Image 1 (cartoon, rainbow over the protein chains, first blue to last red):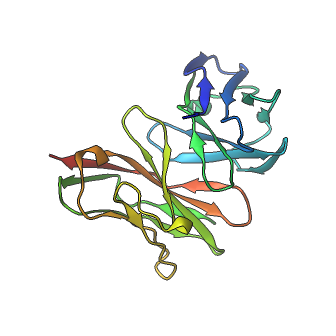
Image 2 (cartoon, rainbow over the protein chains, first blue to last red):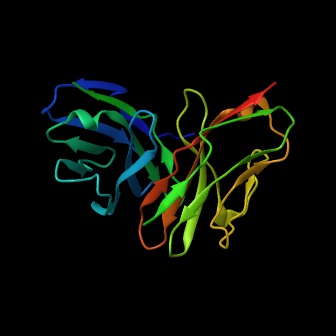
Length: 112
Length: 109
């Protein structure tokens, strides 16, 4: 069964550094999403992406964040200048319809 | 503002007992509700959605617009049901999802 994959599984970075989190959605899916989960807190929506553009974004998704689909398979989340409070688990998801999402295993980001 | 509330962080039931995981939402429009499950060391996966009115792994959930609830129920809990359960709301006008804080279910053998 096809799965969403994410790399790396863990990333440690220094405050102020840029990070790029990578996701490979399921190949025939058209809708892509990023979520984050701060330790002990709920899963929070960041952004949805369709037809090569952002369709929705939350208040969390400020100018420090950007998403890209650089080729036909990858979907990336970039954080330009990481802050301590960006430490979280970041989940990518994709769907072939607007309502059924398949999640990746997550990338655990630690900002020191 | 849209919000999803799962009042129980932890829930323990005995095997064979009925289980109900509560979910309440607040949204002024027409909601779409989902339940996601995360088993130990596995990824989040969709369990069921209200528009399908389906039963998955013995679980059902009915959308009650009057009570703004979407509680997840199973008449006889199994050990393999032990997991983290998240209720989620999709707002009709967009493609944004709101998750509850999750309920950790433990089924005691």
